[in-house]
Each structure stands twice: as structure tokens, then as C-alpha cells.
Image (tube, rainbow, N blue to C red; front, side, top):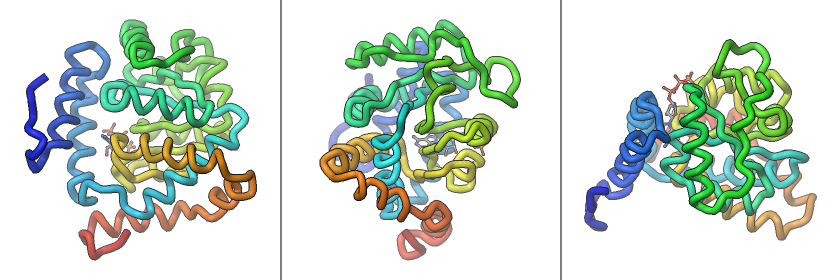
Length: 249
Ligand code: ATP
């Protein structure tokens, strides 16, 4: 990987780009993943490349949801696997969630590569390779999931999900936690908890909140879930994007 000096003003953004490039070279990330990354970067630039307060509140609510779920699952696609493999493993450990590979452009080979990649980063029991269930209302490969993974989950965290699939998962009655830098995307709009932040910042921050909340009592977790206002979070992010730092948070 190309060395990027630590003091480069766009250091984090450039490191992220190289991780996605490497993901494509290694057969983990799809070529469409490059386009998704570009779209995400544009929104992140407008958000100020920071976790705004409403996103932090969403990340805390997401942590509370994962901790109180019967069967929490974190959906992993090629972008997330390339960007934050260690952080995904830490999140699963902190919340008791399963990691399930879930691809829009699904091939057996890419699923296996991502599962191997996660295992190399310390994951155990990665789901998503059985492909023995389907999300109702979707056609063909993009409906394919594991019966004991996403299909069975009551709470599912989906970073960078396609809008149709996000809507179909919500239709199944799941509590859906979506990480997406675009507050207007159909995925963010379909979410119970829309997290308008970069996965690179969001996943470690959900883990930090989960560690904190796992020491709190059930009432504190429940309060965190009840107090979260999804409409306000979407509005705050859109205001920040349209108005800049003084526009809203
Ligand atoms: P819609 O949800 O409206 O149907 P889409 O499925 O067409 O949109 P894609 O083109 O697949 O969206 O883009 C993926 C989405 O992921 C974009 O909304 C983009 O902002 C978001 N995204 C890309 N990279 C990141 C990232 N690192 N962190 C968070 N979100 C990201």
C-alpha cells in the first residue's frame, strides 16, 4: 500500500481510498463499491468529515438496540470488510452480534473471500455462506441470505445497504440500523435508526457506546432507545450538509 504521510491534510480520506482499492484488488470489494465510496466521500466532505452530535446519538441508540436484541446480526459487504475488518470483529464481541456476509452483487467466491478476510482479523463463526433463505419481495441473488443469520435476526445493522434491500428487511419487521452518509438515501429513510456517518468512524463508536452501555442497567438501554428520534437525526444531518457547520447538527 502507498505510504501516506501522517500530517497529510487528507490523510484519513486517502487511507480509506487505498483500503477500498486494495479490497477490489483482493476480490473482496466489487467495482461498484468504488462508486459507492466516491458518493460517500462527497457527503462526508459536506458533513465536515466528523461524527455530528445527532450521529453520535444514533450510534448510542444502535448500541442499545444490539445489546437488547434476541438475535443481533451485523451485515458485512465488500466495502465494510475492506474498510473496517478489525472494528467489525470488536463490535461483534462487544454486543454478542453475529457477523453475516451479505452481498448485493453476490458470488460464492467473494462471499468466501470476505469470510476468510474477517477470520484473518479474528472473527469466528462468520455467517452468510449457506445461502439457504431468501428475503421476501426481492429477486434473485440479492435476496439470498442465511436462515440462521440475517433471516433470523430481530435487530440488524446494515452499513451501506442498497435501498431496495433495506426496505425489504424493514418490511420483514426487523429493527434496522443503517449506516449511510447520505440522509436522503432510501436505506437511511427506511431505517429505525439511521446513522449518518462514515463507517470508519461509526463502527468503532457504536462499539465504544456498547461497552459503556453493557455496564448500565436495562432501563438505561431502554431509555436510550426510546429517546432516539429518527426524524430529528435525518433532519440534523441534512441541515448540516446543506448549511455547513453552522447549519445544524
Ligand atoms: P439508495 O439507498 O438511495 O437506493 P443506492 O443504493 O443507489 O442508494 P449506492 O450507490 O449503492 O446507493 O451508494 C451506497 C451508499 O453508501 C451511498 O448513499 C453512500 O453515501 C454510502 N456510503 C459510501 N461509502 C460510505 C462510508 N464509508 N460510510 C458510510 N456510508 C457510505
